[in-house]
Length: 307
Image 1 (tube, rainbow, N blue to C red):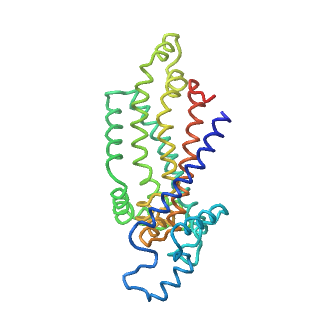
Image 2 (cartoon, one colour):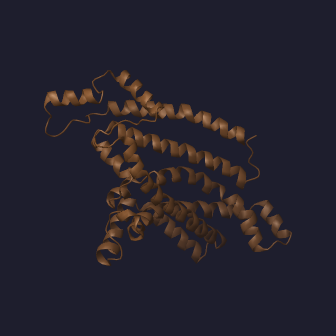
Image 3 (spheres, rainbow, N blue to C red):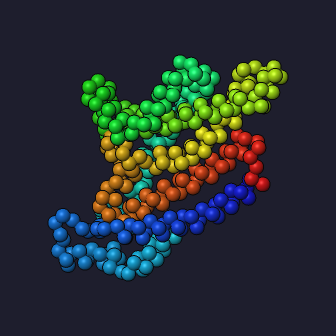
């Protein structure tokens, strides 16, 4: 296992290098620049700004300079927020996104797994149909519809929760964003768990366990559930990376100061360094959580070996 983890970490280095390189050049190919505005800047002022941020250098020199900065852990200054560095913006926004994403993911995995098991054990019954209907609705209704509906219903009409804002992470301010982030993930987890659990309950080793006289609880939770949860683990890796690094739509609608909202502002303002910093953080989280999922395979399923 240790050798497998080491190999994956070694593969992650060139993977990150490719992501950084491709993202860097794609950002520069996109039309517009960080200092292009509706009202054009004075050419002298614009030239001074480009010289200050080394944008007057040839593209390959800018690329090498950026790589040298990354090697020192320096993401560079923000073009749209010159009073902050990219590292400072990420340090302020990432904990907020992680807090919301972690809560949404935990609820989606726990509730979705439970609903999937209930649906599988009651196949073609009312409970199964209810779970399927809920999962279908959750997976088809996009978050940019769920978020305004929550605001209209529970914030403006019933006044149970605030319309938006963070308020230092107060509980009432987290309910709307967390539920909006959770519902689509819960729907996917429930459907995955239902299908996997139905297949597991029909497998030969479950029939053998029943023939040996094991109780229903032991058959379901000690044998069937252990194998059925593998597809959910596969899905949880990319989902965790996406949720924990911020949801662009949810953070924008609810006015949450996470990195998803900063990413939108940076993309609109052609803030090269802030966009690059966000891409790198998302890439690191994706690689890390995929590695965690691969390790969990061997823990959950004894048939999986990486030796």
